[in-house]
Image 1 (cartoon, one colour):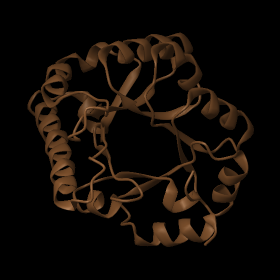
Image 2 (cartoon, rainbow, N blue to C red):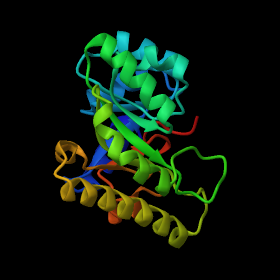
Image 3 (tube, helix red, strand yellow):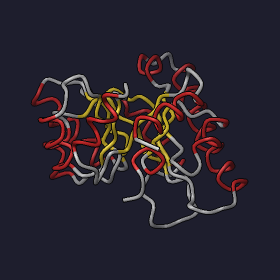
Image 4 (cartoon, rainbow, N blue to C red):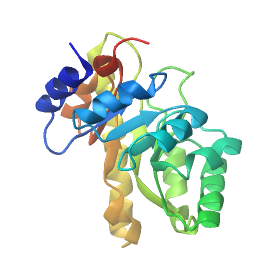
Length: 222
């Protein structure tokens, strides 16, 4: 099927509460434009230079999500173009995003990446690190904390995948409970849960995802 047909089929299966991030990394701008023509407006990239180049050439109303590991020295390539940085995995990175966003006068929407997989190669905060960070949210004046992101283990055991997604949803609820208890203003926007990819997004949706990141099922294998 074509990119347009894949998008139509996929979005037709999603509840209204779930948004699709079409992962266009490593794909040419022409593929993005084909998806855009089919109505897709939200795209995910994982390389700063590639996202910046596409953003400068693509339609202005595209919502770019940065979803890859971001080095602090590449923040300047991402913050100007990203509607959301989904993969914030350290306090050091948060600090640099906040600093650069301040220099632009831009409030940057961010998700905190949590390590939920049973794979050491995955990035992200631990549950304990997230809970320790919550009281510091207000000091990052140019970051809008929007929720959590995670990648489940790449295994065929969907019961394990479900358990990992469920743990991420539980952590989101735990953080929101802290915000409600302490009457924090950030609570109003802290409601996004990005999890699920081409092979496991149906399980992610069942477990509370509000954003799914799908590439292969739309654009084909790299």
